[in-house]
Image 1 (cartoon, rainbow over the protein chains, first blue to last red):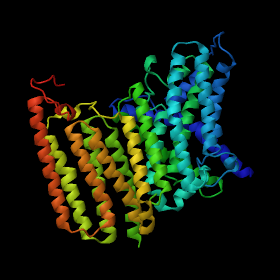
Image 2: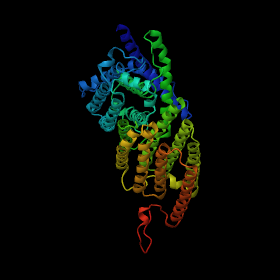
Image 3: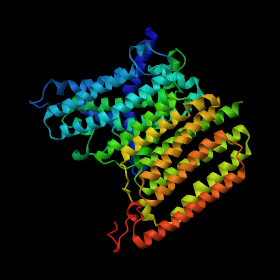
Length: 317
Length: 228
């Protein structure tokens, strides 16, 4: 109990420590593909460090929502982390406290408060970004739901650890059309939720075109650092769900001793690096969609996920 | 048998991707994109029939894979590219009878319909490959037929026909793996000829009228209308 609890702590530490690195590697890879040098992969750490040491300015006209939001944005990915397999392939203490839906709810709370805080400031760009994020959000929601339905049809459970065991145990299920369709739908969902390129440009600094970034414009100092770090952790957590539960449930620790768990860290990092390369390839080969084309993109994701569900119900899946 | 189960797994993987590329053909606006999705779908068909030919030791399936790869992955795209200039393929916003989200929903309905339709047969078949290929092949046929109706441009319509044929072949390699090579060859030759004829026709129409939109070709007027 205490032992697996400490592994849970290790998982949280893994996400805390490596989330900025993941963001840095993504940015660097993207610059390299565009034949530029790009910032160091440790730049996000420096940014966060710098922001923590700066003064925080909070407008008099904001309410408690504005002040509480950075902490929520920072804490919710950690809550999701203790529910999902990040390093181990056997369930840890809190594994049965909530399923993938609970993870979705946690991230939903963070998104909800971030949108409220953006409206709270009265900055003209904040509410615009918030309403756009909500637009992307409510289009992504049905895809999330259908993905969960499909997963529960195939694996008879939505606890991530159990789902992941179903895929490992059964090669036929791994290659089934339903699984492939599900993967593609979930990948499109990650692109939308993470604010990556076909939906949103993570490195854009033009306020009118921002979707995800503009919510944090009013934050400074510690608040900005927490918002940034939280966003990076959320993206790493989504990547971990995608990789460890749905795509490649290999490389996770089997043994219940500390060395096995620590040995899985480089393997997981390697998997995340490969995924980062795929992501960068997608991002550099696509153009950002116009705002009202996003509904088509997520509509396609929805169609794919429903097709996955349909093929999983009928005998072919 | 190990290799057979691996072949079946890879075939199932191809099945999922073939369905995705059928959706892709419905969802793309650019003619170029439609052609690319068609090339992807045809190569997946070739891969899946080669893999099944390997798993089941069937020379016919190997031959089918080779014919598909030669005709649909190489010859047809090459012919179509040669016959029409590059700017035709780069054009976006090809006029459609139904807009793209609605088209996608209809494609989804067609998929559900074909799954529902073949479910009794697939359950009775007791063969993994038939269970996977039959519904997705039928869905491919129906989605191809749908894009034939919804698309207004000549080349995407042609690709709709070819995609129907892809779907039929994908179902066919599961149902009748011993189909005589002569039939496959005949179909493959036919398909290339169709591509040449339609391509030439489109080229001539485009030269004289400046458009290839099938909808506006049905208007019959004394003086030439303003072509877009």
